[in-house]
Length: 559
Image 1 (cartoon, rainbow, N blue to C red):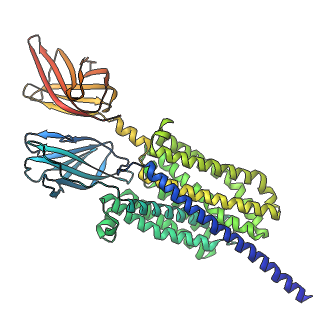
Image 2 (cartoon, helix red, strand yellow):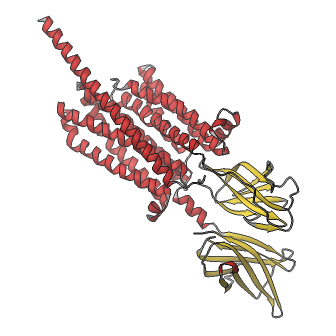
Image 3 (cartoon, rainbow, N blue to C red):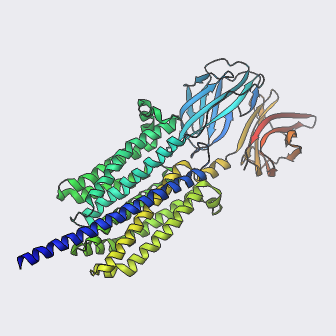
């Protein structure tokens, strides 16, 4: 009798072991397919993203203006952006190609005022700049201007470093695995599995993956901020720069959250639950500390939404593998695990989806931006994956869960296979979300596009500030403030705006301005047909016998 029981026990162990091996083989095959699809996703992200290093902030005005020819060298330069920025690298390239680092600058709201430390010779110079915006993403560019007369422009490298971009994307995906599958898995094991540690080794491995990826991502951030290659990763300035961005806070909070998740699994059981809960909260806090979504206005709404969205993803995604292994074991405790998960997941998904919708509406703003921007196209890919994921989850919840809780063996196997597919989709979503690192949201593009084109015209007889809003082609409005040459009030009888661009074969656009009563002159219902450098002339009728004409170039952007 004892021999038969022992043989039966060995057969059961072999059977369970075979099931486990088969399950892990399916996971291995699924992971291989996932990696292939992730490569396809990142290629889509690269193709969708523009081939220049753009981010949240955008340059809207430069003095000297791009392409300007000056009679004498300026004593300072100024760059005005669509939002406040922090300069990282400012360089003046001489006509002979010699770079000069500019270190003296001042910040005035959205404008960076830069001192010119030396006398400039004749020829074309390049003002190269690299700044970082509030969302932690760097942006760079250059402005060409000439002193005396134009010359051959010096070469300034501005190519996209695909090796660094791939490293940043990989670091993001691995960090997501640590935050969502690692910390989320620790929360599931301590709160939902209640002490039965299915898949604990995998969860710990995911957390360790995040602990490695987080600091490397910080280094990659520093490289990207300074426009440096991967070979400079070990330099201290790279890490100091990365830590000084808002992404530095994300990494610090993420490391703390990953540590809490790890302690909840390897530390005393009595403290496991509060540690895991604190780690889950840390996931939301880390994501809310930086990024496009958290930097959007109003931040009293966007940052809490990012927090809830991130914590909800960790709760759902982290429970998948432990739950799949539990169901595969066919144990009695697996039914209780599934019951707790199925009762709590519905409100979590509702909050997750609501937060995601709010953030998407704020970031995208118009349906047309889904197809017309790289950010929108990546969002469409993510939405397609989410539709598949939600459909699969709904089928699991309403058709399989009840039978699986009751212990139906075949149903549990079907649910295990379905959970494997859910994990695959989740990993693909991680890949798409990491691609957003290289694409400015339509909200940011709209802010930059709405910025006015502005010039100041100063002569001995009169001066004026002219703003054309928005500063791109299409319907615009002009606002004009006129003064005397010594900044005194100028009570003109009439003001006429004349815009001309002879090189495009366009006849001058002449419009009389009206005075609405707020001290400015306005021109509405004005259409600028082509971008480029226009000449703006103001005909100011001071009296019946005196007409003052002042003019200056103004740059109009393409729409």
